[in-house]
Length: 404
Image 1 (cartoon, rainbow, N blue to C red):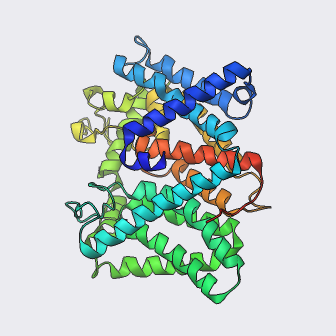
Image 2 (cartoon, rainbow, N blue to C red; image 1 turned 90 degrees about the vertical axis):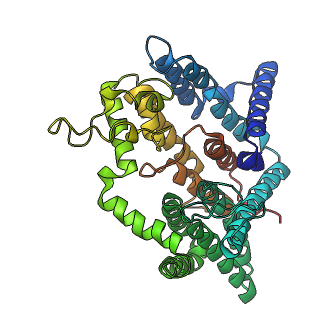
């Protein structure tokens, strides 16, 4: 399923549907519903019901199409529950899934290196118009999946090599960690780089054995970013020049305009938002054209139509514009429960695979970040699959290294 989330979205959606329906049918036939009455799922069910209610005609303002999309959002929580409680019960299946994750991370990384050095990827696609490295894709979207897959793929191998206590094995672990981080830097997307750095720091905090390779990787990343001013100027421009300019003038940046528009929509519809896709359908309403200086400056329209986008680029802003502050509170509660469950016991008994899955979930749920839509299959689907994997590993609670 992971490769399909990179290139074959329709097939990935079909896989999610088959997993969810099969799991529900099995639960009904065997009358096994304990999974639905415990843990995080009851809150997820309430959150989904509230999202649907907020999208109903007469309450929501996003139309019938959005209502249909809200109804099928339940596929993600059901898939997570299926992966957590049933799909990954067999150790061989867990090892197989890890191998697929590792291969997908290697697939992205090698194509990033190929496009950086040769100017084109395996399919003949060249860099994007502004110089971004697209990896195996025809447009710049390699950063987010690479940031999600990197540490679940790399940490188990790195710790296994370090456990051998030979110079060659330690060198291999260091090279693997450094190359993984440098690939994300070469992609040149600001938020994935920052989230990957956060994930690396948290992983090093939980796994003492990788602290030295992590420090080497951080130094190498800093050197590459500095050298990119000469070696790959587009990367330096995006990671340093453009990023510093946007932070200095954040309110006027596209992300600042989106944040302001989302806050206006949330303020106008605090209890139930505008329903599913509330930001997308509401940002073009002139009633939301209130910039940061409004009402002191009545002419400040917050960019007008330029402040619009398909989604607010943040799962928490998406929750509040779709389902109001009650929906936001429930989503925050889910995020806290997920992270607490996936990370349970890691401080006392760290396991490389579990740490990798924990930091991947942390990166996706980090509130101060610009992300894709929370329900887009290429990112949302990947996040929920990795989340189910992490919840399954926490449920079983047996440290293990993958069989390579």
